[in-house]
Image (cartoon, rainbow, N blue to C red; front, side, top):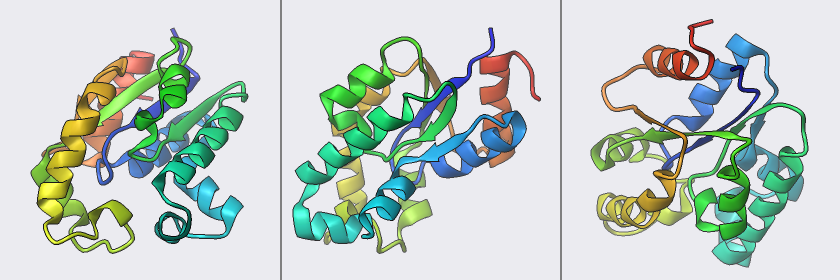
Length: 173
């Protein structure tokens, strides 16, 4: 079966944007990056939006963006890491007609990938590594609802992309 509705979920720093871009290049299925769409639409960085309006308001706007995206005939979505926190988003992502892929990444790998990134509002704390553990612990049950789980630790983007293509399309395109 050919899947033409794909969503990548997982923690910040798991590689969702990078892998989504690779899948787009290989398949020519239209790519949507929810965080990028958000920032373009509201003319604010997510960090700034969090500061002004708070996380709950951000999650509502994120849901509106997801609802618009899934109206398309085909798509690859790179979601924000917290998209699964909203029950409406979970209903959309795990409804059965979207192939959802969890890019499973360890706390240590996430920390190493994003430790110098000051644009992550949830990590602007005294102990970001501990915060990553807490966030991952809170979200893991939702991430594991995905149709496919791909471990990303110690793999490069090509290995991860190849694994996804083999699972979705039974071949590496």
